[in-house]
Structures are given as C-alpha cells and as structure tokens.
Image (cartoon, rainbow over all chains, first blue to last red; front, side, top):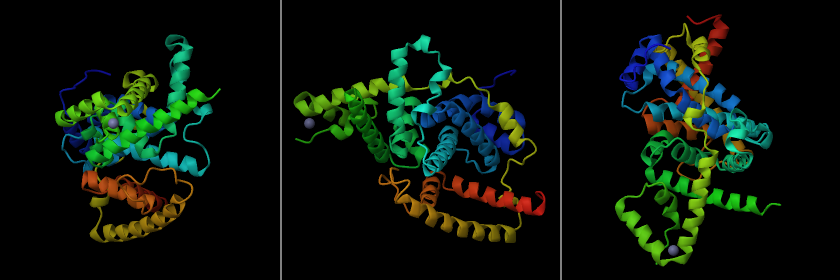
Amino acid sequence: MGQQRPDIDDDTLMARTAAGEEAAFRLLVDRWQHDVLAFLINMTGSRDDAEDLAQETFVRVFRQAGRYRAEGKFRPWVLRIAANLARSRGRRARLLKWLPLDTERHDVASNTPAADRGIEAEQTAQVVRAAIARLPERQRQALVLHRFQGMRYTEVAETMGTSLAGVESLIQRALAGLRVDLAQEDERP
Amino acid sequence: MKHVTGMLAAHLGGELDPARAGEVEAHLAACEGCCAEAARLRATWDILATAAVPPTATRADLWSGVQARTTGQAAAGWFFGRSATARASLAVATLALGVLVGRWTGTLGGTAVADDDNTDDSSLAGVWLQDSTWDDQASGGLSDSWLALAEVTDSRQSAGNGGTK
Ligand SMILES: [Zn+2]
C-alpha cells in the first residue's frame, strides 16, 4: 500500500478528492474503512450487508466531495452517510417482512473463530446483538456510535443531527430497553 | 427527592459534567431504588462490550470495489455544473418526487415502520422529510437524501439520453 501519510488531514484529502486526485481519495478510504465497516456491522449485524453498504458509503463520499464542508468533521459526516444507507436498507428489509437481524443472519460471528472467544461468550454476544437489533433505529444508532465506535455525545449529536439532550435521552432509553429485554431473555428456558 | 434514573447512562459513559455527576452520586448514596437500577444498567453496559465488533476486527479492503465504482466519474457536484434552467427544472422535479415519496412513506409510517423511534426529536412528516430535516440541520446544505434522489434522477436522464453529457 506504500507510504501512509497520517499527517494529511481529512479536510485536505477531501479537497484533493474533489479536485480529482485519486490517491487522496484512496488515503481516505484506507484511513476510514475499518471504522465505517465496524459501525455498519454493529448496526446491521451482517458482515456481507456491511461491506456492501461501506462500499456504497465511500462511493457517495467521492460523489459528494465537492460539497463537503471543511470543518474538521469528516468522521461524523461519513458515518452519517453510512447510517442513512443502513437505515434505508433496514426500512426496505422490514417492508419486505424480513427482520433486520434475525438469527439466521447472524454471520458476524463467523469471522471470529468460536474457539478463540469461547462458545459461551459467543452465545452471549449473539443474544446481546439480537437485543440491540430489536432497538428502535435511532436508539440503536446513538448507542452503537457511543458504546461501540467510542464517540462522545457531542460527536454523536453531530453525526445524528440532534441535540446533546436528544442523544442523552436516546442512549438512556436504549440502555434501559436492553436491560429489560436481556432480563426477559434470562427468564426464557 | 428527585430520582436520577434518567441520567444513569450518561453517568456510565462519563458524559455528565461535574455538577450533574455529583448530583447523581449523592443521590445514589441515599436512594436504594436508583442504586439498584444503576447496578442493573452497569451490568448491561458491561455486557455490551462482548457484542462489539471493533474496527480492528475488520480486515476487508474496500478500495478495489470502491475504485471500480468511482473511476472515471467526476467527484465534484455535477448538479452545479449544469445550466441554471436545467438546475431549476431538476429541483422542481426532485421536490415533486420528494413530496410524493414523503406521502408514500408517511402512509407506511403508521404501519410497517411503526417501531421506528420517531418521537424523539424529529416528527415523522414522512420519512423523506425527516431525512431532509436531519441532514439540513447537521450540514446546513443539501441533504444526503436529496442528493441521493438527485442522483437517481440523473441516472434516469442518462439512461434516456444514452449517456451523461
Ligand atoms: Zn432515586
């Protein structure tokens, strides 16, 4: 892949991308693809869906590069594109009466050998992922951005286009909802 | 005594300012109910870590796929490169389509997507309109959805004209 140039900031790379410099765009993809992909896997529960959506995300980054505002907020910007794509796919899936993440589509685990993590831990992870998948869309998004992608509330608010109080409320309800959902899971035989 | 259950997630995430964090801690020391809820939420918070897929766990290299889909395309906005008349007619067509889509999804909103969490901070005046509001607030510019629809319109035109001019 050659020389990494982490010293060039995202805004500069976006300006060069808009000017048609493919190498700059490639640096952006290299820099952000894992974050975008992990976010989409955490949102959709499907590695295949996530890879497809992540690719589409970067195609849109490229197409919209000319309208990107250089304010040092590339990450919220790119994750918002990813979130919009995940949401429209989830909505379409529901309209077709598929669950966004039912048990047979739990292919996330397949990339991590069960032997490494322990079968019991993997089972727990699957139960938790299924509960996350049952959360309302915006609650899930806020929670994933904060707890899994490590975003502070201010960054979640930027990504989701909402207020700090809105984020606080979404994450509070997400966590409380999961608590109830997982407690019911424990009571199942 | 004002309970603090609504602040517990922010407390766990270290997102409360010192004044509110102090308020929560003082309350937890005195209120059994909130204290028990805090313990349950902490357990949930901790167990979430088991389900996370961290960025380091993704090995895919997206570049070849992305490159295949972007090579030869202009990165800058095609929209603004067009004549004012073309932009105006496109904008009208897109707006009309947006209203239609808004109506359509608004209807669906009462049934198929009723589990979406639309009560928070954006009212559901059609999913389309919700998207627009969201993006406009955040970027102050054209919404992603708007652009996405504009792209659809563009590719239809291209198909009709036998290619982009
Ligand atoms: Zn209390």
